Every structure is written in C-alpha cells, then in structure tokens.
Length: 311
Ligand code: MF3
Ligand code: CO
Image 1: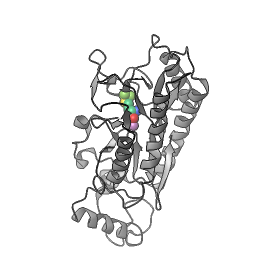
Image 2: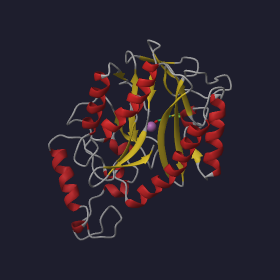
Image 3: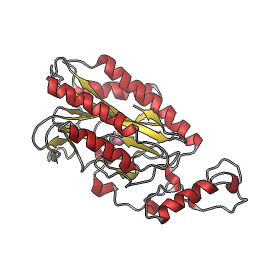
C-alpha cells in the first residue's frame, strides 16, 4: 500500500537507510556493498552502468535500496513466517469465520515463530493484518462483527517483521460458491502478477511491469487502482520507490540486481475510483460498489530475472 501523497514524493536522500553506503569508494578501497572485495573488482562497473542510465534521465535506485546477500537472507527468513501464516489461513478460512479470528491466527502464528505483525500500530492501524472483503479494495480492519459468508471474496494482507527484516504479501480467498464473474476477477488478478513478474529483470524498468499488468487488466475489462500502489520493502516496511501498476513501459525506476519491491495491484471489476472510510480512516472501497481483488508478492531482482521472496 501507500498513498502517493504520503510516500512517493519523498527524496531518496531523506529516506536513505544506510548513509555510509552512499559514498563512492576509491578503486582500491573496499566496496560499499560489504563484500570485502576491492571496489574496482566488485561494484564499480555496476555503478558505472547505473550512472549511464541516470545520465540518460532515468530514475535509478539509490544504493540503500540494493540489498546485500546478507539482507536478502534476512528477508527470506522473515518471509518464512509470512508464508507460513498465509498457508495456515488458506487451510482454515471458511464460511462462518470472523475476520477477527483471522487476525488472531496471524498474531498467534507470527509470535510463535518469533516475529511481529508489521501492521499493528503502523500509522495507527489497530490490528495485525488487513482483511478486505468484496468491494473493499484494501486496508480492511478485522472485526468480530465481520463474518465470512458464502460467495464472499477476501484479501488477507500479511506483513511480517523478523530480526530486522520485513516481508509483505497477500492472497485472495474465495468462500463457498462465488459468482463466476467474481471468481474470474480473483483468478485474473493472480494471473496479472505472473504477467508483471515476466517483466522483472535487471536493466528493465518498473514501468515495463506496471504497463504489462495494466494492459492485461484492461483487456479483461477491469481497471487498476492508480491512487494506491506498491513499494520497496525489506529493511523498512515501506521503502522507496512508490510502485505503480498503471505506469508506462521504459519509465519509472530502473530494476537492478538486489532491488526488492512488492507487486500488489488492486484490480477493480468496474471503475478505478475508490474512497476511504471516513469513520475508521483506513478501509478503502470501490466507488461503484463492484468487487476488487489483489494478490501481493515481494520480489528481488536477480542477475538473470527475479526471486519471489514472499507470496
Ligand atoms: N500490507 C500493506 C501493503 O501491502 C500495508 C498495510 S499498512 C496497514 O503495503 F497499516 F494498513 F497495515
Ligand atoms: Co505491500
């Protein structure tokens, strides 16, 4: 998640996670990545390549967004909890379960595995997980009063903190007999991730991914929410950049090995327009009342493509 206004406009410098890593070493000095190798035989040519893109006017990731092997391992450990929680939900979710019970499961399993639920108290969010039903686009708040019914679709968005690292992913669940059109929305929202993932490779752009998702969704007659997007993720819950799924091919941030972000398009059956619940300040709904679906994966760009970290 992330509203454009609160996140996308921040300058990289302000949000820099490792200021010391931003300094360029001399050729024979240790590389900024912590490998212990000399800069000239480690990231020098990598930096040169990034700088060429920057010179051409592209947005490039700052070094603090490029994860070291150690950081990637930390995110994988966090993701083990994240995935286990979602696996538990998929095995136990059914008609009659309240969204508060889902919150209890998430909280219990996360703690049992030594982690913390990142949403709890995040900017005042009152629960441990987001549960968004039917026409709720995202940030649904678990409650004893919300009981899953036959025909519901629900997104459970789980964000985990473990030992210094964040993982973030979400899945859709269908309760009982879901209308065929709605079922198709859920299935196509999953397919949209695969279509986006095909575009994740080093020296491509986030816009290649965003435009592929948007084109696919439009071809299905759906619309992609453009006011809320994804984000870098791993050392912080929400890192730069803000990630759009309606972006243009060849635009947005350059993808380089070690860059970690979420793919989490919110796909509406009807119009893209949304509004936020005035009473709780969180839950986002479709304006037209039609259903919305979202799956989320956290990915790392690798030397030859991508690695899915949490799903
Ligand atoms: N998990 C959401 C995301 O994908 C963020 C939810 S923030 C919360 O980025 F406060 F609502 F939990
Ligand atoms: Co996210």
